[in-house]
Length: 413
Image 1: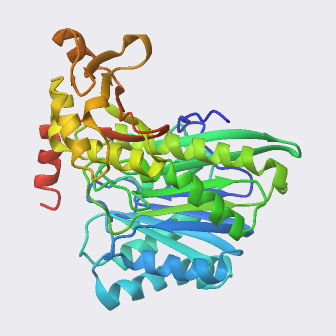
Image 2 (image 1 turned 180 degrees about the vertical axis):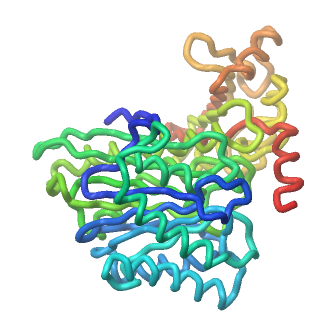
């Protein structure tokens, strides 16, 4: 598998066939970048996965429909932060179309070839005067100097989609195929309202490989299942979650024999971004990796791991470094998955530093201080073996601190 790396913003660029920029237009009261623009010439193949929440933002509806009809000829992605454009009724739908029309007019293409992303506060209409000004500024930025403030032009798009994120999230991998190397690079935002149901944030993954929309969709679904659908910060699913995979074709086609290698590289990039989202969870102090093995099926393992990762009791124990392993077993037992607790085992920590705290469903022989120390690692690794089979799954989450409550208690005020 290709090994992904996070890319510093002074070196972040999307693959060949992509141009991107980010600017500030005033949607964020902070004055930070809030409009991101990606453009293509002549066009990309595209695939997308979206939230399964029944309450969805206007851009999600627009993008689903556009990808159903124009997935082979997407010309641009326009994204804004500072306003989710969700639960905004007919006005929200009209503002989404108007956003696509403004971008399309600059590119000389159809509005249906433009995808729209939004993130921010729910229930607030977009300030279209500001956004239209931002669209114009973003096109000007694309034509400007190659870098700004020591960062690449493409890096501006990364910053422009951030909301409560404390750090930008990027990943890149080079996949060596028989026809030559192809690049896979992506960026994402997400820190709160994060829970599986595809997706769990905004994320854009780009490649210079040539793949049609149907293959992109299939590959994206596989990668998402073991990455973005296995990350949870707070158990709350957003209304705007969108994951896009865009292919420029600049590096040539991916032969069927090379598809497994490409799929592995794509999954690696998505896993890296998912882990970064969990690590930057609102108020988080460390990443938590929950692996459940010995399950009858991967689905069962995922379900148990997810139940543990979503437990506030477990997450607060991790924050305090309290090796209260009963909270792990209780969460697993409440997951709905059948297993025999009398054969379960549990470890805190990884490899030779791991401390076994449960064996055969009861307390193992261990020193409390040593187990507590493993819960202060970063990442914290929790490994539960159900003893019911050979399947396993990993879910990424974070600890739960008082800062999370503080951030969300006055999010809109």
